[in-house]
Structure formats: structure tokens, C-alpha cells
Image 1 (cartoon, rainbow, N blue to C red):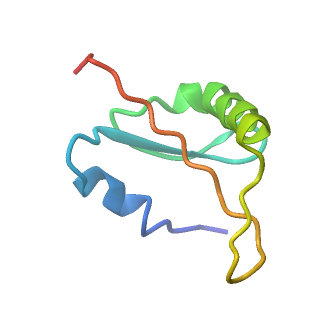
Image 2 (image 1 turned 60 degrees about the horizontal axis):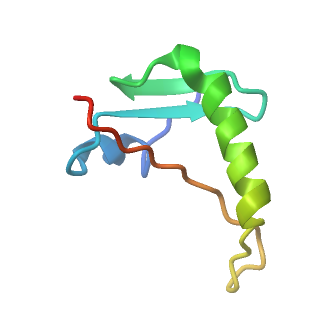
Length: 79
């Protein structure tokens, strides 16, 4: 099956300062990378998101009762 990811993933590169985006599955396999994002780092970022989720807990959307996704934003001085 071919999947197409549109918003917000595709729109993220339009935001000021965003140079790359990476989407990985639960096993750390790269689903999609764009811009300067390195697909080979998908496993690292999956582990980082898992750790962040354990620290932050799993937020629950009050309107739907479903668990919300977690977004990790990494800022560097490197351009």
C-alpha cells in the first residue's frame, strides 16, 4: 500500500526555521523524510520519542478521549 502524508507533516517545511522532517513507525523504520532530515536517524528519534513519552506521560485529548501524539522538536545552532 502506498501512503501519502499531507498535513501537518508536509506543511512543516513551510514553517519558519524548519529545515527537515522525519516520520518513523513504532519500530524506528523511516516512513518519510524530507528536507535535511537523515532517514538513517529514524531509530534514534523513535527511541527519543519513547523516552519523552515516558517522562511526559501520554496526554489525552479531552474532547475525544483518545491519546494524543507526541512531537519532538530539536533545535540546533548548526545550519
